[in-house]
Image (cartoon, rainbow, N blue to C red; front, side, top):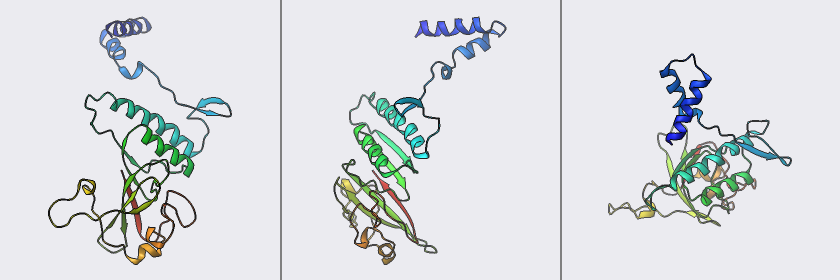
Length: 223
């Protein structure tokens, strides 16, 4: 490390002899200029810059996948094997097609990352995802309340989650951190939600992993 810093200082001294000692040291020790990273994607058999012409979904994936890999690499340095490997995402895959969404979410599992994700429509019920807990938030205009409905996905089937213990004895470990509602109102069924009788994990139109919206706000939180 010492040799590297000495080389940086010597290079800046020779490149800008008119600068003062402070300016030279400031420039030499600015770590942001030590390395340059470029992200490329393969297109038509060749590697091209990820910043080039691409769809919105391709650009999202080109940036997200390296970040997931970097997070996994960073967490691998933890000395405690039980340390959390938390990643939080907010509408991370907007504009990405279902197949790419499924592969990207499966990649998060391959990286062994603990994910908390918010989305207006994404339920993440794909075969590539072995298990998630979902908190569906529903609201109706002019009603000062939010309905929280819990769902669970086990890699093949999505079903209603267990109700938390409301007797004061404490919720089971799997229920902590979630507020679960009673049966959803008729508005949810009318809007095509999971209670509408459709196949779990699929939108009535056949699109996997996501649900159709209705006349109420809807958001999913999954881990």
